[in-house]
Amino acid sequence: MTIDLDYIEHLAENHEGVDVGFKETTGQLNRGMETLCGMFNGSGGVVVFGVSNKGKIIGQEIGDKTTREIGEAINKFDPAVDIQPIYVPVDNSDKYAIVFRTDGLESDKPYMWDGKPYRRHDSVTSVMPREKFIRLHELQHGLKYKWENEVNQNLTIDDLDEQLIHNVIQGAVRRGRLSNDALNDTVPIALSRLNLTKDGAVCNSAAVLFGKVFFRLSTMQVTPCAVQRGQQAIFHRQPTT
Image (cartoon, rainbow, N blue to C red; front, top):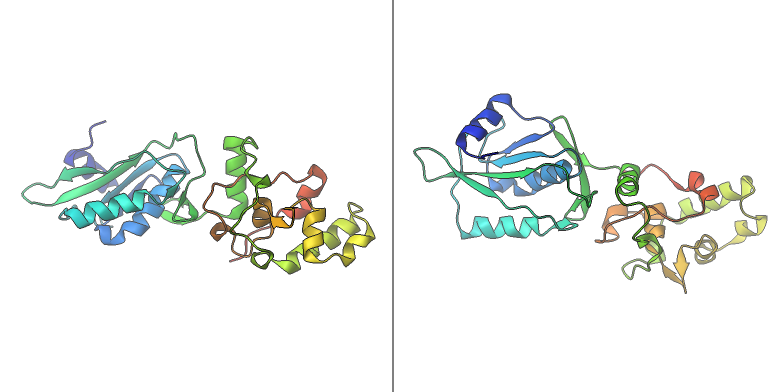
């Protein structure tokens, strides 16, 4: 597919949607990258800088500062993405439209940008809920990376929701999955009982289950937690906002 001014004009005539996003300039670069991340995690799409939200092609000037900022923004994707901007000249002007396009067929979903995963719904981009993020990773990767069992040096017990940990322990005792002795556990002992620590160090799985600020806790990609099947139902929760 040739990405030229005719192509952009065709997009602009049909307005924004789940697979098309417009930003007037790279002054909205962060928002544009969030939208692109949502398209990586979905079925693909196109983000164009230099088009107003009403579909008017206005373009923008391109300088060293602009190209440097774009490169830095691309480097904030995790996992890394293989994508480059396409600069399309605007007629009768020294300005350009800047186009990013993905077909959504990348194999490393889910993607994060600047530490957060995004999704696209209609023309709206939002942070992906924790449970959807975990399900998407499980669908794409299964448990082959064993990320959840690795110690995270950036994590401490203070990063975890102590009340939620106690609630989970109480629920497990009520369901007969743990003995009554577990009700007297301190947080470190409870985490050890649940196989969420190694030699006192906190594992990534603890962040997924109990992290106060889930997506800040690691820059590595997240996999589902390898907790025992009988315990999964009481562990998973909706993220807090």
